[in-house]
Image 1: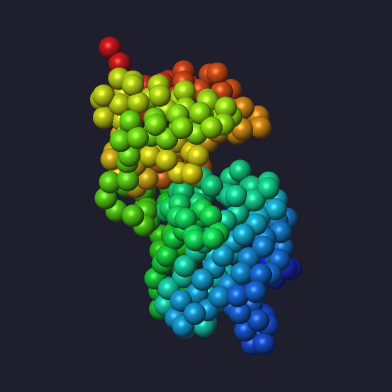
Image 2: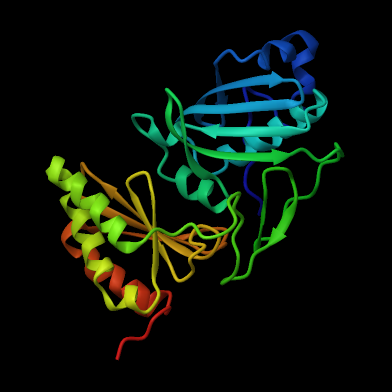
Length: 284
């Protein structure tokens, strides 16, 4: 049985943007923020057409599930084609709102968004895409595939290259990562669990065996390739209020593996993941 279709302000996604009419459609792309109900979620979004570039900014998502982002993407893509846009620039600030959807960030990462800093705005998840010229809709992908932002379906093996805007090495030296979190912990004790984990990994046998690391805002991202984000990797997010770590394995699977562990158990949990779950390393 397929996933139940989400409605946007009472319209099915296939009815939009045609159902808006020309006047309201023009208002939608004038850059002013608007609140839209997508399924059970309320989304604060703004769309601005600048020549052939459509800029889509997602500022807040309240409620909803994993289907909110793909539903919005499909409608915005059709809108871009109707307005003769050749590129879409996506800026997602919704992971920084007061109560972010915990499912949103893994979905963004799996779809190839990268973290960028916008002057005077802060960090967001960013991606820029070419808009295919065809306006034809495509059938949904099979369960072992994913669909990128412009409607192209790609098959991802269990271990293999993941989509990313930034080719080449994305890892940072372990000593640099360790120093970054140590400085944060020195200024704010809330960062001590993150600093302890970074220090453990930087001095571990895994690092000596080739484990690579990167950071995404305050998250620690590790994997066996220097192209960390473009290949299977483990994203480790810290909940400062609950004092727990969420571990998310991004490997191209439609539903990423994830688990939550207390701060005092995270080092053992990460070691087990590296040797047992992912089996990237075998310690003797």
